[in-house]
Length: 273
Image: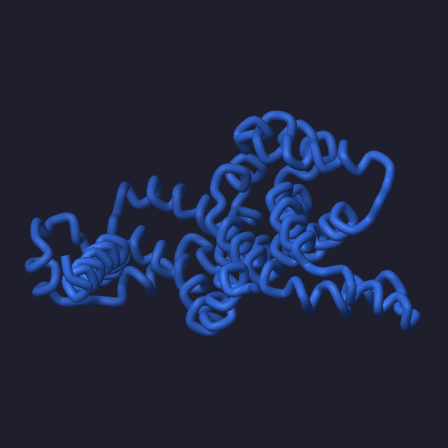
């Protein structure tokens, strides 16, 4: 098989893969712009019918959609900031400091990675209930500010960085805080960006624990609200898809604004010599 044939075959596979990944999003948008889309049997019928913004207007003006959106934005942003700072501090200590019990702490981090999140449902709920944090933002933010994955990910990245710059900074009289935030943090920027993106997406789309730890509308996040919205609307697909499209909007905007940073961060490990 010639090189040209392989390139064409590879391009065809990429096109098919892109279509498979993009089609659900396109279908969601098409359904969201039609009233009662379930009556249309084919894509052609759906395209020919008049398009409307009514589903979006209804979603924005009913059911406290703005409040749910703000709750998701607050929780995802706060957890992302906590992960970037908290996990960096813990990972730096484990990667650079010689201290008693470090092996035990590192082993506990690895052990937590092996546990499925669902195992934490009952103990976490009981803990939040004992603290009086049920139906509070604290229950949605504090338990996730430092995660085993974030510690493991940053620890592995920091171990790959040379310590010579840190030693030079200490010889110049830099404090430990200055070494961490002025020397190590800039070097670890690609890993911190990747962790921030992963954490924001995971918490923006999180359903299980926000559903478990809140039962009032004041603290309900968007994924949980959409699940209840489905029930209230008796599976009104037009309104549901409009809400889902609005929920996906922040992620799309973030990618469009920071796509160069995201791509460079994701490829930093592969390009590092």
